[in-house]
Structures are given as C-alpha cells and as structure tokens.
Length: 290
Image (tube, rainbow, N blue to C red; front, side):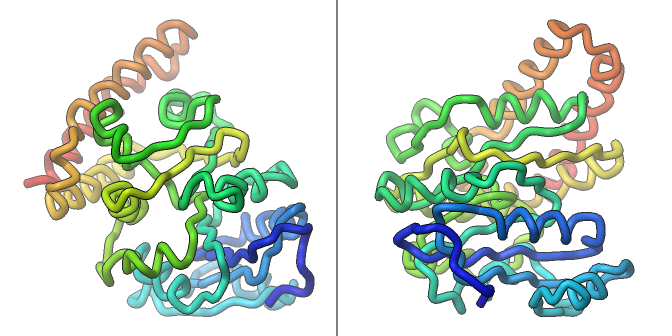
C-alpha cells in the first residue's frame, strides 16, 4: 500500500502497470501518479519483467515497491489479470509505462464516470509528441469529444465500439472479475479490445474520457509496424467473432483520414512515409490472419 491516500474520492483504486526496460520512464511516471488529486489510490502495482537496463536499481533506490517476473512468465493479458484478480480495490486502473501524465486531475477525470455510475469502464484520450502518422491516427481514435459506447452503438461504430486502450483505462473490479477478465488466455496484443467486447456484449457501458489526457508516443519502424499488425491479424484470426464487425472497413477509414489530414497540413514527411506505412499495416494484418 502506498504511503498515503490522495484526495477525497469515495472509491479506492489499484493501479496496475507492467514494466520492462523502463529506466527512462519510471521516475516521472511514479511521481505523476503520486500527484493525482481527488482520488483514493490504494496500491500501485508495478510488475517488472527482468530487464537489461537500470529499472530495478531505480525502483530500489527510490523505495518503490514492485514484483519481478522472468521474461518467460510475461503476458500482456495474464500479468494484468493476475494482479486484477488479487486486488480488493473498487476500481482497477491499467496503465503502460510509457504514458506521460501532465495533469494532476488525469486520474479523477478517468474514474469520474465510474464514481458517478455513468459507465463501468473508461479510457483516456491519447495524444502524441510526434508530428508523424501517429498524430493523425490519435486524432481519429481519440477525438476531443467524450462519448459513451453501448451495445446499441454497434450498428453505428461497428468494430470501433470495442476500441479500448489499457495504456490508460479503468474498470470496476467486480465487473472485471464477474466477466472473468481475459478468460485466462495469453493474448500478445489487443487484450483491451478482447475485454471491451465482453463488456459491451454483456450490456455494460464504456466511456471515452476526452478530459483525461495522456501523452503516449511511438515512432515505429516499418518492420516494427509490420510485426505489430501481424500480431493484430493473429488476434482477429483467433477471435473471428470480433473481426466480423469490420476490421477492413475500420482500417480503410483510418487510412483515408490520415491521408486527408496530411494533405491538409501539407505534411511532406508523413506523405512520403504514408504508402509504405499503410502497406506494412495491410500486409502485416494479412500475414497474421493466414
């Protein structure tokens, strides 16, 4: 348990964050979590996969509690699920090590809809520091307006109804347990969408909270992007009932949005990268689905 409660929220929160080679993130991330107001943080669970950098030494020096696991035991879904099932908090918050939190109200804005019983799960708006293709994909996937998604919205949003990111998300713990989390599956990617599908199809609500903002930036190489989408394709192959809601149309819509925005901004760097980037995504997805 951390040293003190923060703020005056009525429900307590456990934060779950896997770590791997996180030496450039951990100090800033932990400090920003401790600065959050109007919420009761019960525990911050860091799960450190054995690393090759100084993450563990930093954790020890700073007196930050953590659990260490071997590389062979890491799983995006199972590591989170194990800690979630062991939690006794009212709300579970999942974050990734590379988010940057600049607002002391980030967490309150994320859990507020749960506190007010407006939704059972929420996720933050993500922005990027880079002026690359991710800038436009973030704009499309994380708009400036908040919205609540329910089963009724499937006809309108299709696959995007299940869009949900555990880079910065929250869920009522009892609901997570009731729905059996990730069903004990070792999911290498999209564990957040897997659970979001279960939430929506069981008549729960997910709220996208545009007021809860984190900076989450990537600059993937084409090879990294291909491998990422190959894993995504494998996910949809193994969970084809989710794929049936339109991965192709969803991907096509995103690609068109990126092109239009890059042309509008006359973003030469993005326009040069664009055909190769989209090809890496497309062929990676196809390879994964084979």
